View 1 (cartoon, rainbow, N blue to C red):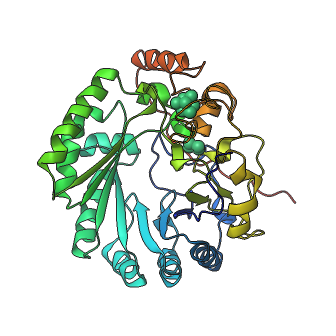
View 2 (cartoon, rainbow, N blue to C red):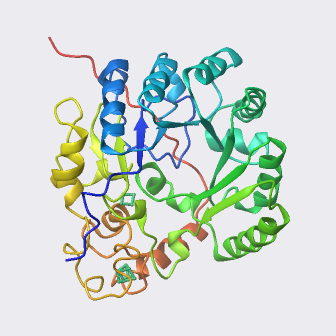
Length: 370
Ligand code: SF4
Ligand code: FES
């Protein structure tokens, strides 16, 4: 049996410090049932998680949320990560960090900043992020990052309502002093699945974007690296989501649940392990959650007999579940899937949509009884 071996150490840990966030992006990668502040791991618990991760072989830590700066102890958390020997990348919306906090983060050992942008202009950015004034705060924050001497990646989440401005977003990344631009098409799980009709781009938009990227890459060589991943709904074959289930990444949620990908919390039939009760090593090597879709032995046809099964690992489990109700099905992004036509139906639905968003929101915790 071909396996992505549990003996191979994970490369990265994505630490979702909190689901709190001042923005309300309609494609947020957090689950629709957001975890509450009272459930969050403490500073010391995160420190232990980082030490366990480093001992397991993790090299890179991506500190994310929600907005990680919503944690007042972010500086102490970064210090724990740095002391554990991890390379630390802060994934932030940039709307709530000032020069004082950024300097403290750099002092604590922060290695890299990844700033998300919603659009190239303030009106569109503020509308998509659901936060008036947010876009200009991001621009000011990028300036602070540059002044602090930290390397900057700009991350732009692409969809129908901003894709036509891709040339301007590339210009903006350059103007902000980024060394890298990540062009990430929306992945349709959770909030984004709810907003799919408003977000799916057309084939013509995608083709224009592909032409823009192909021209920009050589023109900007040595100034800006551009990473992009083709979106699934226009694909004939899926991508290896997360590089393959349980193969290289661990995600720890604000309350300490450990997931093989950021969207897995929405999958039924899992009892995801918890860092409060189980070590990361035990979770990585022996938990059902990480072993369920490792390798190829779980695969149905047509993946089971397919020559690409160890390249794309059958695609995305969360997308398979969202579209077919079965997390073990072949990802419908594959043209060999019996469900591939669902993608065309979704694209037709999107073409007829008025583009209105359902923004992300955090449900208030009901008052405790008694
Ligand atoms: Fe990948 Fe499965 Fe499609 Fe083959 S059949 S290309 S393994 S998703
Ligand atoms: Fe969960 Fe792809 S997002 S496996």
